[in-house]
Length: 125
Ligand SMILES: [Zn+2]
Image 1 (cartoon, protein in one colour):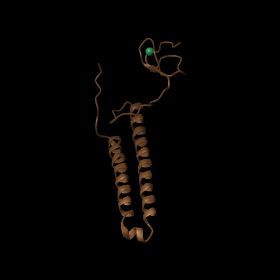
Image 2: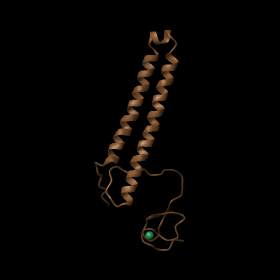
Image 3: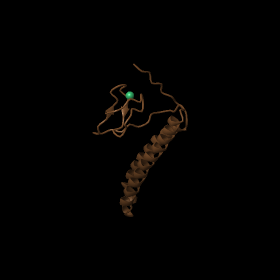
Image 4: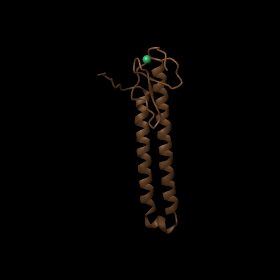
């Protein structure tokens, strides 16, 4: 059993909060735009379609910002990891159907391109 200490603090954890707040605000923005578009006065001047379009635009840029802010946080985490510094949050993992390879000696995950294990240094076949 291995203990994983979850750390807090650092700009990377603040970026996570900002990203989540941003996407939530953009969802609220979309809802507000839809509500405004259903107003009779707005319908009377023919702006309800514009309002919905604007709301969708707000949501799209919110989601895009979320991805970019999350990517920024991940870059900080990776740099801190490389520098051997503690970092808050977690680095995203790639999911999918790809094959993964593990060292037969130590069990560390290795790349298919590796000739030697990056963890224990034993030759890979
Ligand atoms: Zn190994």
